[in-house]
Image (cartoon, helix red, strand yellow):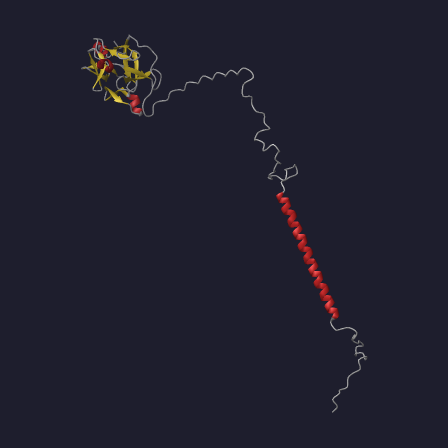
Length: 277
């Protein structure tokens, strides 16, 4: 066989009628297109990076610059005033300072209103009623219980009891006393019987004794009126035993410590009426 094969002529077109261009190297157009695309891509990236850097620089400059709050600025922004050349202004410098010394005469202070007196309330823990302003009377009186309106103070066998008083003159005389100025305190009361004895407490029991002139007797025979409840009633407090009041218990007159109870109020409240004799 011959070593040389038959080759088609180079100038013969293909069956489709197209003949390859033999004047240039194969693949040159693709290389140009690829190079152009790469150059465009690089240019776009550089441009984007440049724009982003410029915007970031502008934002930093804006954040660093102090701004003044204007009428169009949104609420809540803080404005930084430019400091003056003479130094920082003191707070409140734009306000008028008061004159250290008055230019005219000082105004006269208005008198304070007189406080009103409060109505006293009944004691809750310890009694504190006010003293009666009425002066002691020297006329004959009788003392009647508030919660036993038919019983009166009466001296019987030397003791003062709460008894029903009949029509007999002796019983009525034993239930009639003289109210005089207190032996220990003239603003308080002392009570005497028809035969000149004084009512005093002894071992906290009310009895009728002769005045022995001692300081102890004068204190035992002095009682200060206290007003607790309704008008016309009173309670008698001991001078030498504050907080102890005359009350009846089992119809016996005694000096008992205060109790914040309705029963105590009733037993320790009395009415002074005209003498029975």
